[in-house]
Image 1 (spheres, rainbow, N blue to C red):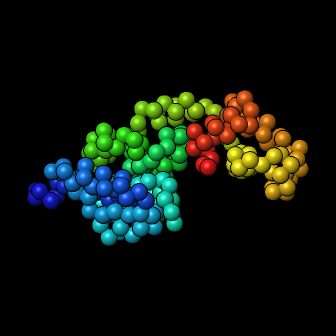
Image 2 (image 1 turned 90 degrees about the vertical axis):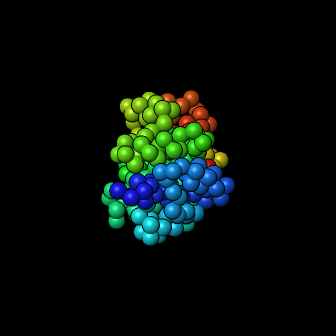
Image 3 (image 1 turned 180 degrees about the horizontal axis):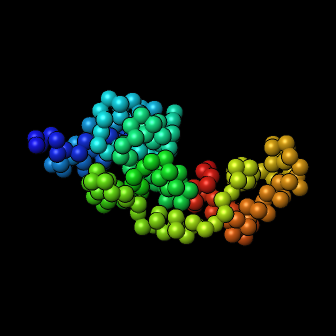
Length: 210
């Protein structure tokens, strides 16, 4: 087997140039790895994957043009065996679940890149799944909670934007009493004390984003 055959070929997709530079430095310093391509949007990530067919793809979730979740789905529709590691600042369980359901095999927090990146790349390349302990804990902690409906998520998002019940009712063309009912269910499902607490929980868990 040639040395090239042993090299783990990596594609990094993120819209932050400094992070990409850091990843490039870490990966290219390893004798068994090479950064073969970079992308700044989800659409670019799909294009670069087609061109280079990397062994491992590092995928940011929040990118312009097309987000990471859509890119993961797009890549795996064409290449079901693609090994993708989500690269994110966010430990929210909903984000993690969406990424893993879309086919990601690893979940790496950006704050831990300098510690965990290389080990995660090698593990996922070897066929393992890698999820940080704090993400796994959140997944386990919320596994039994009832999910918000799409309408409840929309109401929560509008609360986060600073809208009162009457304004939300107007925006969604529903009765104010219906909005109040949605909020009651949201507070119950999220085990929140009030509207502000519900928004904080929603952001932390990745149900909504500001």
